[in-house]
Length: 158
Image (tube, rainbow, N blue to C red; front, top):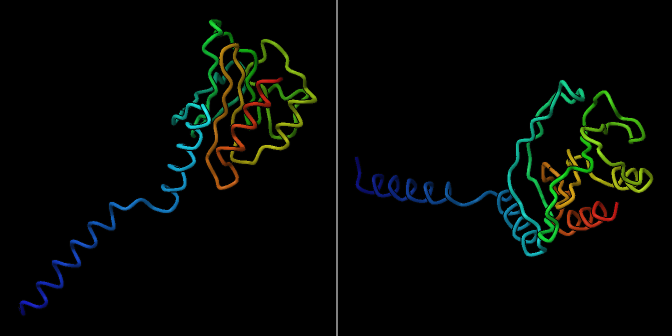
């Protein structure tokens, strides 16, 4: 083998290895979005929500990024309500494709429905506790950190 071919092969192997380490465009967008959300005061983590199927009929696990606004001054961790974008037994008062997972205290349904209709299809779960509000999203290009922050502000006021 010619030394030139060996040198070209080695250079291509090195360049290929470096290119594999570079984040994809999607990974770069998500990293930027998550950093912006953290700067806005949100907590971000990857979440696998396992519904209580026998209790409410929600069948499928919900996997995605959870964006959470925490209220450290509130000590109670009691759930108020949780809705999921899946068919289930109880969807009374909610827009099509949304169902109740929990509803210990009812929010203002008109305001909740207006919010749910505004959310893009990648938002799979919205929940409100005494000490936090959160949503789980698949993080499509339709969801930006500013929009998510605005949605969580609206959930807080319900």
